[in-house]
Length: 338
Image (cartoon, rainbow, N blue to C red; front, side, top):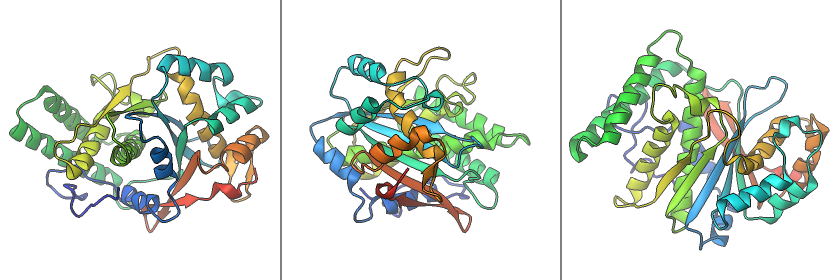
């Protein structure tokens, strides 16, 4: 379903109002997502109309100066088998870290191609910014608006513990952004990933009769950001708030919800086997030189030629900087040679 931004209770950056602002790049992505000919996502969900519970697994390939691309991949899987049994099977045919492999197992590629798995990948510009003029002030405006929104929720729905908790978090984030040495990189990437998780979850809920969507992220700095100060990762709140606004705009009595997998602080992650799917795809896309149409590492050639050319299993988007703004386009991976 298209985002109806004029109708939604979504404020614009720079306003001193209550709201959960949507980034321009997500509006651009929504335009590209719904262009004629880009129906792979809808076909996948229609094929699985009977599924009411969905899982999204995420992995990232960011800030490797030896690779041509920064990539985030979201692998969407219907919940139709025992979680642990299916995960154990994935573990038995896959690997621990695609970046450290000498060769990619063909049977793992075959498994992804033959199962109900759809991966959405977004290639991000390495020098990305959320605002072309003053990113720090834009982020401060964003958190001020959500603080006002939390106050509005408390006023109208009562001082629920959740609202008080997010109000406290967002005030701490605003204070952090006011510091001269604030690390905008993690806040920026957290905001980008949260926007996409909310958007993908919203689209799943609009296409199918859905009870819940589970998001399971690879252990990453965007999940651990300020984790010692908060009871749970801040990104969960960013996702929940935008998802709520998008869903509420369609149905004020919506029942669908997002749940989260929380990785252990150390050692193996309990859902790590599933994350090997987006790990492989993000690593392969990160390695691929689209200007030369070739892999910089030959081990990823089978992934690009046999998996990424399957448009029923993979959809790849790119965010580029145009006139200072992040805008979206889709990449035709069917023509990839590897």
